[in-house]
Length: 345
Picture (cartoon, rainbow, N blue to C red):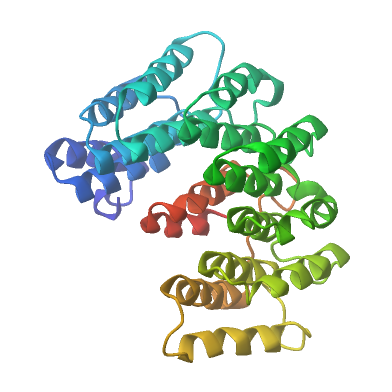
């Protein structure tokens, strides 16, 4: 996008041209599709949709996954019961049942979630359809659809539904997604979250524990000085020495999110920095734990400790770009390059 010069009008044509010249080069396709989606976020431009759809229908796992994310970004909050976006979503969900690639199915689930952003009750029909599917990957998309449709509303119906799935679904991925999305729904009423996930944070299932850690990090980012923040930190510190490496990773990242913008005199900072330094110096820590420590280190000092992750603006409105950035960042579980999306928050 930088090559397109200073004019904003030049960015999207440049990206579309790059995409058309990429041919079968999957890394270029992947970057191009995400860039088009981010540049034209929420515009629901039909011409760009057709370009991305053609890449999606090539059925290549990496290019198709990015094309689906790009379509989701393009249709952000545009899920309607009629019009071409309704036909597009029907077409995409039909393709999710046809393709054999799990990456594409998952990305299409997230695309449906992005299209439902902020739609609340208007997304209920789509949520029902996705949540009742036999394919666990599509049910995973349903959890993000609930999280993004009701982001920041604290809606009791959405919370109840997510908690029910968190303890009842047969798929670990779906349960993890259900708990994680509590963070999106409750970020405005963050004090409600720690008591809700207290038992889930001690679950026998490591995926549920990881989801609880991520939910606390998302909803309570930069709120270490509050009572809810202190409760969250004590729950997360118990997970720093979890027996499962990815739970330790999630707990370290989320602790750093909660501690953002805190000065060194804050009581929890020094022991946490020492913990991270210890993990980085160890010769044989798990790669996942080490990655969590590296990211935690970066988040603690983000922007010279001058920035924080926040899903709402200073005036209190939900920031679409932040919610989308964090939702896509949460997909780094499957595709590491999506780590960069955390900068959207």
